[in-house]
Image (cartoon, rainbow, N blue to C red; front, side, top):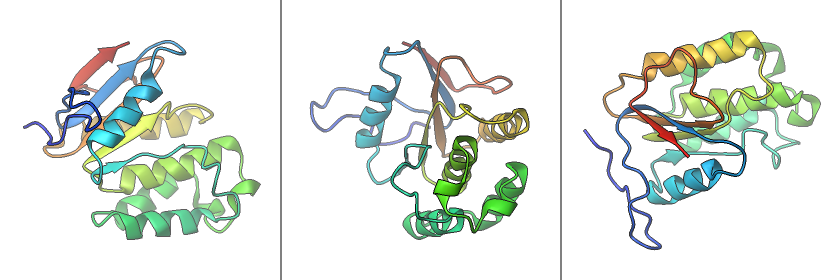
Length: 174
């Protein structure tokens, strides 16, 4: 089953046909990984979760405020899954802290928890493992592996290497 809306409306050229499961977009610095995510975000408009995982514009918000905002924006947001991710990513003690008080890794984990729980048809993750501790990296990899056979949702991981231990629907080398 292919997901709908796989064309960039600006030039009507195929961006990338996504199938359900996990797609890896792999390339060196400057090879166009983030540019491809921009194109996918435009092509799947209204069905996609994508944000800068550093959350640079949310300094004064708490982690909980971020999750609450995403829950309002995504009708299939999974609050139960979010609680599991909060524990798996060791975020429980940070839920009511403003983001400027958190390390880069913790800020990214806040965004990842929201992205993974969003319920979006397409979730775009740009270098999701940067600044994460080993336990959190493993938790995200385990989540992606669990979702690798999802029948209707797609996750795109753009990074320098393929995520370890994840069965891929597609691997794109840039």
